Length: 255
Image (cartoon, rainbow, N blue to C red; front, side):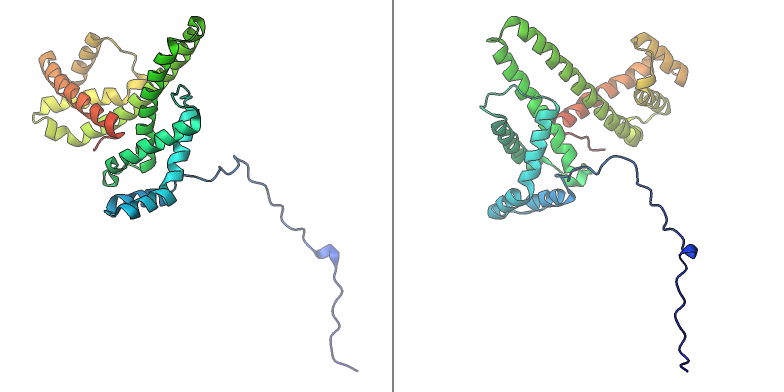
């Protein structure tokens, strides 16, 4: 007789069912990103190169498509449809040319992503372009239709300006926090500066809009007299204007 052991028959009753894999809920994966880290790297290589042929090749192969898609998204998201050109494709090309002109203005060492910078300068360019063309077309349009369109355009402008101001004030408060001891040498001046900066940060929850009431509020926060508050706010007002000019031109503030 053979000493080989016969295989034991499978007992299906002892098998454990496979674990139930639950489907993950949530949004479907987003479409492929067009402004990738490679685009950032390509722009930096473009800026580092002094060879025009190399620059042209980098722009054509690695940068142009991202600029084209960004221009397309800005135009359709904010409905910049008042144009002098025959089609939106021509407008996209114009925006891409504008981006190319602005390439040397982006400074990666300042910590701003290329996407953020070109989104802001592109938006500002299209707002001016769109508004100028709207004024031209309004002269030829039906007055009633023009009134309806201008309402939409104004609302779009208000919404965009609100977002721009919000972004800028975030930069502004960060700048003041970092440079407060350079801006003001005296302790009571810094107290006022800090109080004003806190009000900027809490602006969404602030219910006081009267200038006199704000002065009283700051005086209660700091225990400082009104002339000191006036002196500090004048300095901050000049700083605000200077930094906002920088923000409007470059899309960020060097903090």
